[in-house]
Length: 196
Image (cartoon, rainbow, N blue to C red; front, side, top):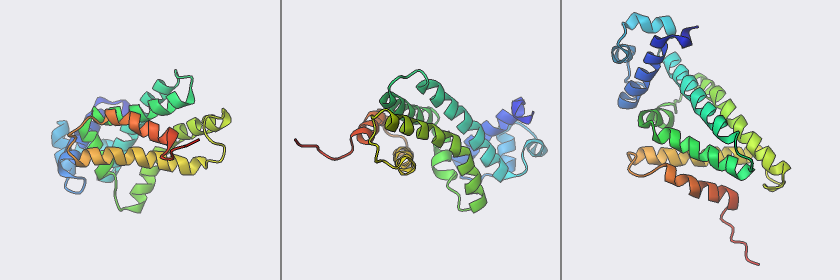
């Protein structure tokens, strides 16, 4: 299988670097090939075109990303801890790979509808993890039974996503992972001050 070959991973890693440095539209396949240390033609043994590289890069990196989140939360008992683990792991993984963060937060936001649909397809597994946490929280009475899980999932994902985008836009000048606690607190408690 192509994905198991070392050159595939080399090309994916090179693509992350080149796209982060130059932007998707200015990242020629030849630049990616040069960074990966392969001939231009070798790229086409693994990928159809540049768009395929971007989608494959997201599939590969997001797959690893989700696996780490699933691994982290499977050992947690409380639903609140699972939610915190998911938030923290999301922020931690992107804080450890600045170039990947630039690609996911800026370069994957393409206007091409077909490309967006492919990227959304990859996100489904991650959103399913969120859904599981929300449904468990409702079932166990930790989360309010009135919440709309799909809407709340969008809100949580949107919040985490915006926190990372802001960090990328500010040139990673502060500790991204330190934001996890505040994000978690807000999701669990909201902004309503319950006065007796």
